Image 1 (cartoon, rainbow, N blue to C red):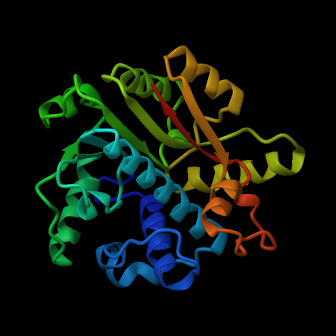
Image 2 (image 1 turned 135 degrees about the horizontal axis):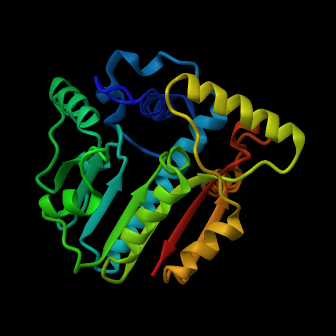
Length: 273
């Protein structure tokens, strides 16, 4: 990411969610704030329907899991690498504290945009600035009032594949140390299993590296599941991107007849301990 604001991928994700509000039916995710947050830039890039649906579906899935956690009595939600996500400002649960963890530059830009758009976040939203080069997740959350001795749900979208395997494991270790029940929702990339897919992933990796956001990790589903079980996560659900999207379309057409190669490596997982 650039130190003057959010990363390109954070902006693209927000643009996709904004366009999804008006361009896609049925709508998977309802987000009345995102277009106001990104302003006139909402229509800037051309974002294909498969990616719009996936970005909407993974966010909807995460928010659905937060709803389940709240119903079970959880009162803390942590959005890791929150980017331009708006859940903290849309939070419908008055007893749920939402901690948004991200780079200070991203949060400064986001808060300026929220103010310009006249979007007021409730007192339940807490911005947690963290530069991993100078601080730690544990210290940043503790300083923000997060309670390690209380249950929590963690949302970690669009981040894991930009981390080294060791860095991803360190964050999972932290989450596993949370008081039960602790749940995490994240997306990741699985390795290609044929030459065509490997070539496509190389092109994608090269493009992102040129934008300053290189891909650093891939996980096979059985590999990541084994890591999670070793950390004590007993409940694991893992979905390919296309299946996750289809589950929210209720039998209506998705992108079955459209090119979706860009999503074949993408998976969304939730684990609970």
